[in-house]
Image (cartoon, rainbow, N blue to C red; front, side, top):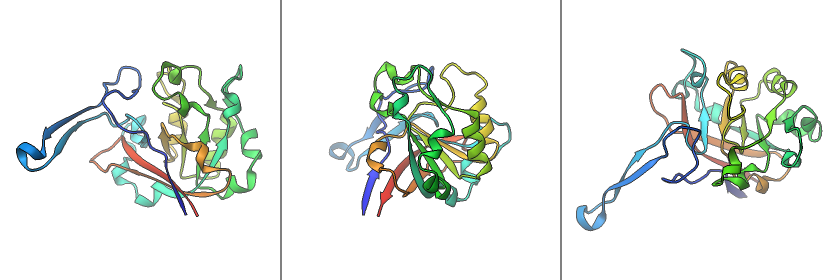
Length: 215
C-alpha cells in the first residue's frame, strides 16, 4: 500500500487568492515557558488545499458541516492534462475523459493534473491556467460524481467575478477541491481518495488534508 499526501503545507507565506490575507500562524505558548506548545491559527476558509461547499457561491446552499462525511471520500482517477501547460488554448474538454474512459466511469472523484502544482509559490501559478470546457462539466454533473479536484487556485479564470464554473458544479452539490499537489505520483489507475475538511459551523469551504491511497 502506498499513501500519497496531496496537500500543500499551510504557512504564513503561502500563495493565496487575489486579495485574501495570508494565514497568520502565531505560537502563543511554548514548552519552556508554559509547559506546552500551542499555535493560534488565523486562516481564510479557502486558503491552501481546500474544499468548496455549495454555500461558497450560492446563497442559503448546503454547507460542508451539513454534508455526510461519505461525500469526502471515494474512488479517484487522475486525468492527465499537463500537455496544456504550453498550449495556446488551455481548455480541458471531454476528449481527456476518452483517454481513460473505463476508469473515469468507475471513479467518484475526477482529479485534474495540469502540472501547475509545480508552479506553487511563484507568480506563474496564477497566470493563464487551464479551465474546464462545458462538455466536461456536463459530463461530471450527468454522471453524478461526488467531486472534482485540481492543482490550481481556482476552476474559474482568476479574474472571474461571477464564477460560472463554480456555480454550475456546486449547485449540484458536487464538491470542489483546489490547490492539490503531488498528482504525478498517483499514476493512471483508480485509487482511494480522501479529502476531509475541517468541520466548523456553516462552512462555505475549509482546508482539507487530502491523500491518495494506492493498494
